[in-house]
Length: 292
Image 1: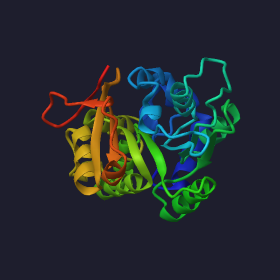
Image 2: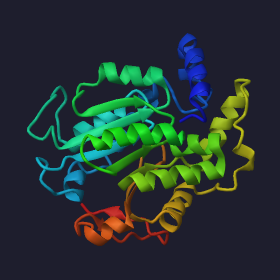
Image 3: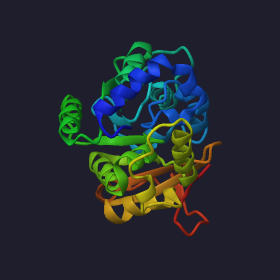
């Protein structure tokens, strides 16, 4: 996720000429817009932690009258977006439609127009997944594009948002205030949030790789006050400042990132969380685990 669309576009043009070096040196993508992201962070590592029936348990209403609307922020070239769609609808490889295909619609956004174009061309579910170029931190553009999508379904918010390994790039490019505002926007737009925060070691690695490649350092890295246990920091911001509650921690990926599910407290008052979904965890930080 980039600080500005202009900056990101320049990075994309530069990357197009030197794609292979960027694969070898991940830090060369200062906005997280890696051209081959799924090569080193395959979708399967997330999917194995997420129950396929998750959305049906969270939203048991009739799909004919109310499809589930999802927002995927920082979708890259769409590999994970497509994988999530197939996973939650229990579609097999090569299967492009089913009786449940109308249950879920995803709006997938990324700041990199080249990656979005690739996602559009390769998506096997064009009726269910919409890809758009969007700098999420641009308030005016965000409001116009997201409202346009929601209005098609007569909605004002998304049922669930996906924020997979995006928070660090927002934080590095927009600072502490930017991270706080980003999470505020997401929590106001979504009834549920599935967040995969990058740990602090990833911040140090990203900054180190930029320096190694002779690129400009992140503007905010050295001045960040929010640091340390980033999963816990994001839990605190969402639960204490933005009116959400932590429902569940699905565990960690092989690259040591937690998958955290949050729910808006206002939604909890009218639609209780399914009893089968959560159990009390052993950690004092209130992380909870999926009940098998």
